[in-house]
Picture 1 (cartoon, one colour):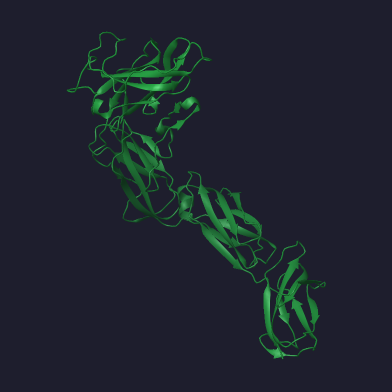
Picture 2: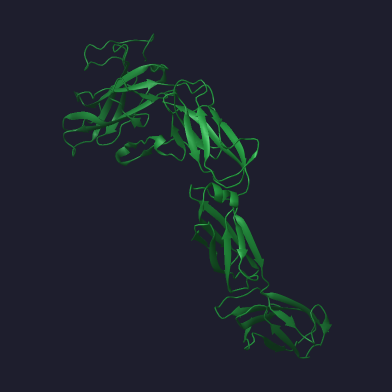
Length: 460
């Protein structure tokens, strides 16, 4: 049953029940003790408003979930009770709809759904709750007030930027200022925005005993901004990356958090990457190397660079280090590069206003394989023969080699020490003719195994 032109019932008193959506049957086994008035009242997972002049605005297109925690004066007794909910339009308290949550547990939230056909869009309602045990019932709770808002904002918001126009390449460095407008919608409460097209979902976590933990979404300034009294708002944001096409996605929210259609603003930012310069000759493998980091001049002029983030990739121990900048925005960093095939540096700057530049890259290539040579068994050639001994000379291409590990055609590996000059030689006599693959890799004094080299030859 519902309100309005549908079946009606008049309250003879606050304790008299009118219409019932769910039968107000008593639990099969009534709880012991005297029922107490439900506490922790929530509607739509939002706080109950006890102020008739400041109702909670809620969407109720599929009904409205109301809930409270029932109790009795005997918390150790049978915990099964019912919770009875009444709802009525504040303009006509005689039109009452009742729902009952049967078999509720004392001390835990007991949700029930007020039916959608009992709640008209744009109307303000009061609702209250009562604990029922057998033939006994608690006092009613104080009323909670809600206004039903099932209508989303009709228009997407307006979105412009006064300092980053959309049709040119902009110099980065300043925070991006955005101006948001309600676009003719008269109940905009705020805005939701993101640098991703999929906007975050407004949710509520549930705590102990089923009690909702609602928060004000506008407290999360990463994604939400409360509107001014005229429905407008301004944003000052640092984009997620320092260059290229960038898009901000925005929708307006009414007081029930109904979202409008989404609008977007795309603009372009020129590169603000720093410059990475090695000090001295190209860094050698495994040796400390110093780099000078220099800010983009236009970026430095807008907001001084205060630090750099330096990430190494391709090495034995990839890492990211933060380097403070000097007063002129420059910095130096010393790194040991030991990538078997080379290493990359990725460097971005951070300005005083929070702007993070795009990344500059600097790369070096290394060949850490040993040189292998043999007079008797030349590489990619044939020579010797079954039972003919040959010597293979091993020479390092990098410093610090202390040994070599080798294998012929996948046989068990053998390790030989390197001499003082880092080189070594190995003697080998084949038992049969055919094609062979000699795999050799060097090892440094730190235990680092370097890149393997495959030496192919044929035994005549």
